[in-house]
Amino acid sequence: MTNLKQYEESVKNLASKGEDFNFPNSDPKHATIVTSTILNISKEVQFYIKNFDGSIADNILEEIGDKRPRFIDSLSYFLAIGNKIQIVIEEPNNNSSNNKISEFYTFLKEEVENSKPNLEIKLASSTFKENIREGLKLETKSSDFFFMVGDDKSFRINFDRKQGKSVCNFNSPKIAKRLSMNFNKGFASCSKFVFND
View 1 (cartoon, rainbow, N blue to C red):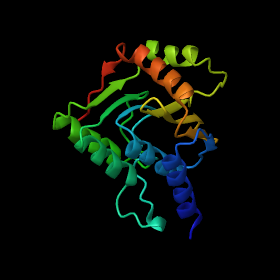
View 2 (cartoon, one colour):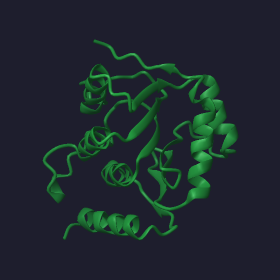
View 3 (cartoon, rainbow, N blue to C red):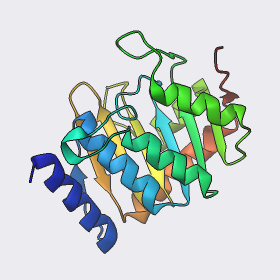
View 4 (cartoon, rainbow, N blue to C red):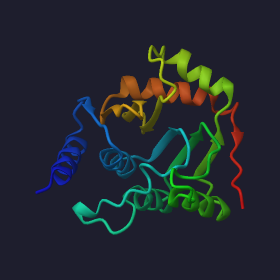
């Protein structure tokens, strides 16, 4: 069994037990497993992300048998069964680091064009960003603070993408509700994200 497969099994186990347990989550492959799991166990998700570079979403975890990007598969199913996701993006950068449009961007654009009522994508306003930093009393100097919340109980918080500093929990209503509350507080101030043709 590969290390990634062991990690996947541990994550599934934590999610099914519903324990209040914080665990680290660093590189994009591990992040893909956690964010996909949050989608799989939630009905409502809020996602604050840097851009559509696809670093998490475009990962194909071949070493554990995936043939397509896991996050996109999970999100596709999540939306198909009527679950709701709100996404706030910090930068309107549509390209990945290798200068091609990411699969994540393409997938979301198609979903928006198909008028999915359970998918909202907005561009972060300065009010939204201030709300997040002040409301959560962030002490980190990093501008790389992003998160995902599921059903006001699961979360993945990224403190610094370059350093790989992240923490996750599948049953921490206190922290998840605080993240969600601050997300909601600034969401109305954000403008609708417009995809380029």
